[in-house]
Image 1: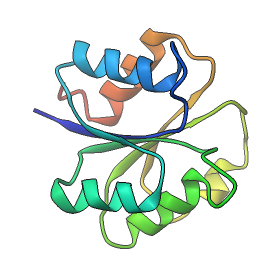
Image 2: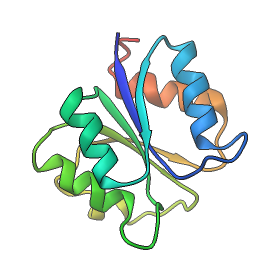
Image 3: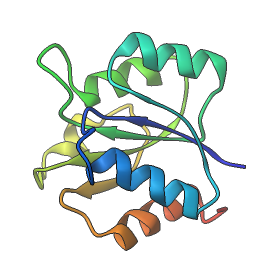
Length: 125
């Protein structure tokens, strides 16, 4: 069973985390956890390396998702999907050295999320 880690602060009802959990369940994926800070993320990854990370670009004032993925990628080559409210065309430049395999712009359609996850995992789900 494929494993994913969700990095997001969007805990509102019907938000990103709810959508990702629901779709992971539909695709028979294991959600290792939901994290908002680097210490929690590191703890999850040290316990079990995920096959895919779904990471919100905007997290808090101290750091963003891109910085977290940069730190993770120095030790672990984990494929990632970026999530943002902004259709930022500069992300390809900012993701040098990070294994970004997908990009989702909020608000998203659940089927779009499902397809992006499947493609990112090499359609092995």
